[in-house]
Image (tube, rainbow, N blue to C red; front, side):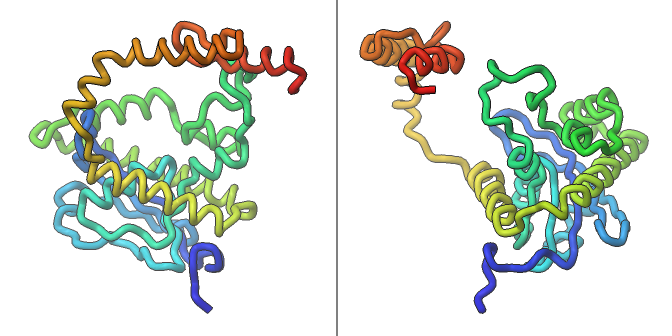
Length: 261
């Protein structure tokens, strides 16, 4: 039988991974380090930039019976492509799986505080009553990675960032094991493959655009938007927008008034 993402069995092996990198607006990632954890054995490895640049392939199995797991993993897949590595056959993004599990199907304006507005790794861990790290330390390490340059790293900074990176793969492994019994593997694989295609390949290659036309449209975008908002609201005789932005609360009110709720 042909093995596809929809028919392959659950993975025999799983690695959680986390890259740290600098990503300036509109630029490809400048990769600093990688941490990897074998979920089922607990073996961990960390690698600094110099080691990563010397590798033609990831330092772990990426075959069809191995899940490569990250959280908001489109960033990880982007680092794969930047390093010239082949993408994993079975990428799993726990951010997508958490959203599938806990999505409230409500716009932000209608959610109660604490019922689904935050979706970071530590928020996901909290949903499963798992230990988290210190948010302030996480922020400090991310700021370090984003502000650093090739020549600014000290040995202490490298150690601190790799330690933080390793801590994240431990947390991701804990989350993976908590979610493992309920993961819909065919769907999770397809979602992971989608994040790899969009988050890695398309972001890396970029989308060709007509530059002059784009700049022309950008210069009059507010006028274009205002025109179509005016036409829509005149058609339905109702204000769906506030300050030029669509308002879900107004939509719900309109649906109620029209007897459609």
